[in-house]
Amino acid sequence: MSRPVVNAASIELEADDAAVPQGYRSPGRRLGPLLEGRRIGASVYELGPDQSICPYHYEVGDEEWLLVIAGRATLRHPGGEDVLEPHDLVCFPSGPDGAHKLTNHTEQTVRLMIFSTKNEPGIAFYPDSGKIGVWPPGKLFREADAVDYWDGEVG
Figure 1: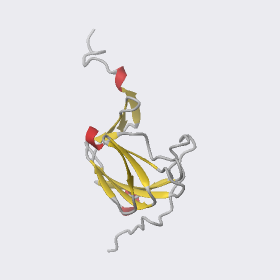
Figure 2: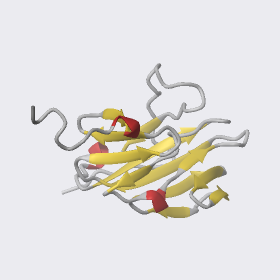
Figure 3: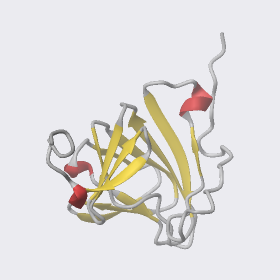
Figure 4: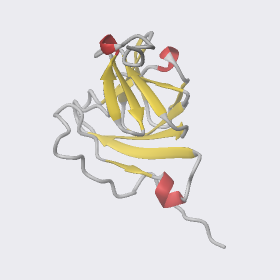
């Protein structure tokens, strides 16, 4: 029985939704469905000049790995920033120590692959904006809107 094969350097990427703002345009492709993966996910993204994949964030319960396929990407992390070169590999552990944002500050296109464990629900914190995202259901909440455990439960 033959297994699916994907070439990460040449896979056709899908355009962003029109609602994605300038600065975060990053055509990509989820590879899990193509490879029939269930427990580990991977996505390939391309970043044009001055584009990022997503806001600065960290996962809770999931670990992510980044592989730079082509170009030079700037990695923001809790300790500052580093410029990553082709074939650099970085691990983002679960929790605040794994916070990251990837941006292309060059004139060349950057191609990246991100691998991740796939726990459900997926939870991400966005320290710059004070948001928490939960997937599913695919909703974001502000940390400042926290309520007491018993709020709405007793009368």
